[in-house]
View 1 (cartoon, rainbow, N blue to C red):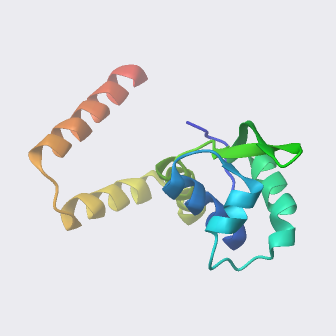
View 2: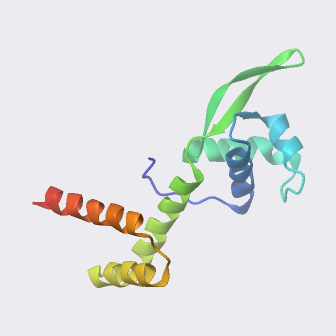
Length: 135
């Protein structure tokens, strides 16, 4: 999983959501075609894709023939869940540096959510593994 922190702009999120939904590499023209309700101009696609490449959010997956030329196809380099985790970690770091804040946050999540025994067992195993690694 990518651990370097980065944020996506509204326009970049639109492209990422499309790549996550399509779950396959897309060319520039396909991204424009499938983005029916986009808030960005089609002429901005080069800039947006280059920004996403620079951030490591997407990768060049291959090439397809478009007319007489070849064009790159792009795929998501991270999953939607991985991006959400990156954002959560970044937001939590800015929220508080106190260890008690983390405990309070997790406690609130556990108390407020419907959590089955299987999930609780998995969480317990994660905590036990972390404790073993800290020794």
